[in-house]
Structures are given as structure tokens and as C-alpha cells.
Image 1 (cartoon, helix red, strand yellow):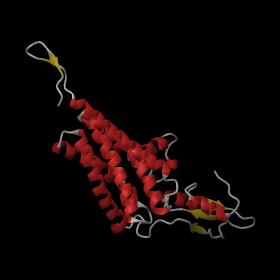
Image 2 (cartoon, helix red, strand yellow; image 1 turned 30 degrees about the vertical axis):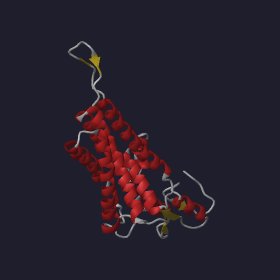
Image 3 (cartoon, one colour; image 1 turned 60 degrees about the vertical axis):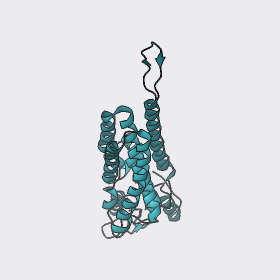
Length: 265
């Protein structure tokens, strides 16, 4: 719990994503509530209810939404449901590209192209059609492209190194852990201790935090989620490169004349 000297300081902390909201207590008067429904409608509702419980029955609780959610999506339903299509997009890209080429580096390049196109589509749906996000369309599309690339390259790298079991394990992890632990429907801090940290270290959770920061908070607190997505992208590329390097050199074979040769693909 943080304490601030005055209401403007609390509002700055909300805009900087240091807190989700604040209760403003004044001597001799009912408390007022500062919320940020763009950060989490669920937390904003809880803070409003706390303010009402602290007020006398005859007093009306003043609520100021410092960073409001979009009018077209006040409950954040569009954004909270975007994680599952993001995961499915990464899985779909891996499966389709497996049918098109067996070369890991070609798959990696194709995933990057696919991620760019998917980001444009996701931005179009969330930003333009549903109105679930604000800010620049290109920024939102770029964040979505990073999310798809982080998922797609990780799954492609696991598939290249470990085959279908590797991709299946990665997809199950993202689906069964990454999706519910992303905290998109509530807030990461509302998850059990430890699980919220795991969720934010997986691509779905990092995508959710980054797209909220970029869309509603002018990029505040976006460094951590951005680094997480870039780390997964680099990990996926590293696995694809390792699989490519292994595939270039075939096992040593013995020729008819008794000499041993190294066969290079």
C-alpha cells in the first residue's frame, strides 16, 4: 500500500502505472475514489465498493476515473479475450509452416512475416472494429506482432529441436498456464503469490501488460514486458538456429574404400 501527499500525486502514480487507484481521505468528509478502469475494470470496481463502504449511508462517494476504459469496451472484454486468439495464432503458424518447409530458418523467417501480418489484423479488430484499445493503431499492431512472434518462434524452435512433442508441450504451457495467468480478465496482482510472476514472464501475460501500457498509459511501465517478449523471440530464433546447425552436418559414414567421410547437407 502506498501513501501520497495529495490527490495530484496519486493521480500521477496511477498514470505511471505505479498503482491501480487510490482512496482520497479528507478530514471531516467522505472519502473519494480514484480509479483506472483502463488498467483493470475489476480493480476499479473493488476500489469503488471500498469507498462506498467507508462512506456514511447519506454521503455519495465521488469516483474519478483517471484513465478510463474505452466507451466501446468499458469492461475490457475485447482485450481480455485477445490472449486466446494470440496463442492460437502462434500454434497455427507453427503447424502450417511445418507442412510448407522442413528448414528451421525458413520457418523462422515465415513466422516473422506471419506475425507482422497478424499484428495488423489484431490491431484492426481490437483498435478499429471493437474499439477496445486507444492510442496509435500502428503501435497496437506492433505490440500484437511482437506477441505473435514470441509465441510462434518459441513453438517453432521447440518443434525444430524436439519435434511434435516439443511443440505440444510448448502449446500446452501457453494455453494452460499462459492464458489464465496473464491476468487480463482481472489483474496480475489478483492472482496467487508467485503465479502472477510466472504469468508475466510468459508471452501472453507480457503481451497483455505491454498492450495496456502502450494503448492507455503512454508506454508507462512497458520496459519489463517488452524485454520479456524480446527474450522469447531471441530464444525461439536461437532454437531454430541450433536445429539448423545440427541439420547441416550428417553423421560420419564409412565409404567402400575404408575411409571415413563427413557428409555435409
